Length: 178
Image (cartoon, rainbow, N blue to C red; front, side, top):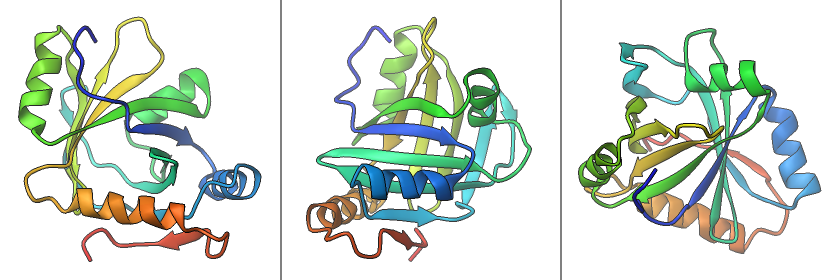
């Protein structure tokens, strides 16, 4: 993108075996604890201009102030994760910025000539928009952290848990609607 949308706050990985990835990140890299949302509650999802339904398991942890997100698709439907894995194999899929003013930040990205290819919302996490960056292997995600979504407070709690993590309970299943 040709505009600055803000600092990169997240590295998002498309994975095929989330349990193996959770073990790798916690045991080998010391990153954790991971907060896991199984079958994340997606709403109004569009991929490449088409309405889609998607079933994902998402795991989030922090390494310092960098959020690590692991994403495993549980169904066979169309998605940027399935397409990425088919072309490149599992790995770093996207970089994310968190926007207090989501609509304005999306407009900035669009004004730079990029088109949103994957959009929607996750109950409890807010809206998102992915932009494929021409000629790059990584997408850029804009995540909505403003407007009283509560996601800022949730991410702060996850980051605090990482700062104080003693290695116990490396994987914690959560429900974002709680």
